[in-house]
Figure 1 (cartoon, one colour):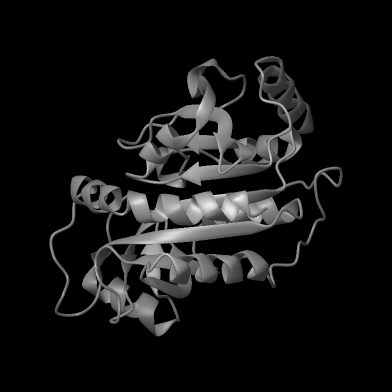
Figure 2 (cartoon, rainbow, N blue to C red):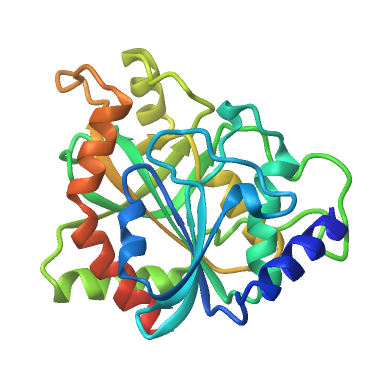
Length: 269
């Protein structure tokens, strides 16, 4: 694995991606944030050695480097999921490459179904913790050069970054929630019984990504900050027919607010 990480990292450095301050992984319907990145270098995933390909509508499959919030960032416009058929090493490699490129922290976003009855479609939730029901991406042989065998997950989401985001949201009059994100494999949306179960065990929102990326980042001792956009509701009496297109539509409507939070967060690093 380390050899592939180094090969991919050196390729990207040769293409001009040098000393980024932060990395961003953009979820469903949120890829247009990259239009705010100045002085861009854009590379298709298909042209990057060892990179998987994004196969999901709304995930463009591009790595973008440039200035954002007065800092240098590298953004993944499109992520990788277990439901696409990818294994743990394929999901892990891009996150590890971001670390080896030099990012100081990782920002993530996703579209999620709200199971907290206080949530509304279009709300933004800062993830404070997670419940991972996906295969752990660290299963298998461990390379001690990359990270410890048993990484601590007591602070999976950085408390300082969370506090900064809450201040930024208040200053910009952005309605915000804090909550626990639960990940499942997908690609099916949840049944009413599953939504009810997830709420009982402590979740506020449910999706199909993010937790493997955070586990990988924390394995390398990298601080993480993540936001969910609530695109549908899994609350009894409020459950409606959900499609990938409706999720994309609702996620896109929140972009300006999410961009404000991310921009000011990164500028404050």
